[in-house]
Image (cartoon, rainbow, N blue to C red; front, side):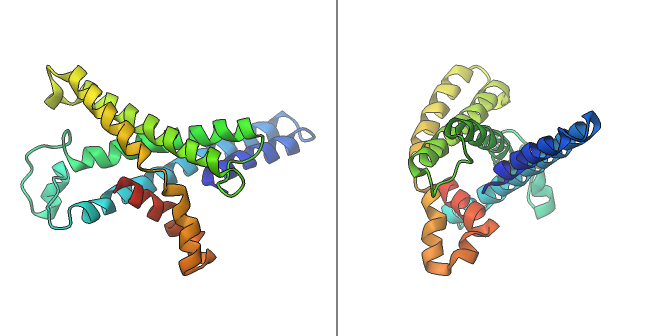
Length: 208
């Protein structure tokens, strides 16, 4: 069960209990549910940022990446503070994906009438994976094209090129839901069901 599903389960159960406990209990339950959802999205955001950072070492093992203002803490020269750096990509993509991932899970879960799960609905889960990645990365690309000063005078071209790249990249991420089941066969269910096996590793490979 995903963190998002767990948070909505808290809301449902808390609301049922509030029916016999009055308005104050229901309001408290909604508040707890909102905090759980924020925590779930925050955890996903941190996971995607970590995955993007780790993917750098898989894609460019010998290359020093430009982390913008963070370079000063690494003893490197700072040429650009944020826009056009890996830090922009790590933070921006992770933020967009965290929101679209949880939103997509909620939509598909309501459509199925049960929590979205790869084991019980593999085709639907793969569709969810493609849609949330494509939507999230496209939102990031649109924001980059609109606000990145390096795209001044060519913003329309930038969004067109980046959206096409987003569509191609999303299609190559179809394998992400299969990583954890495959890992379970090699390292056992305990590792596969951990945060590393079920979230970080699949995301890192998808970024790569």
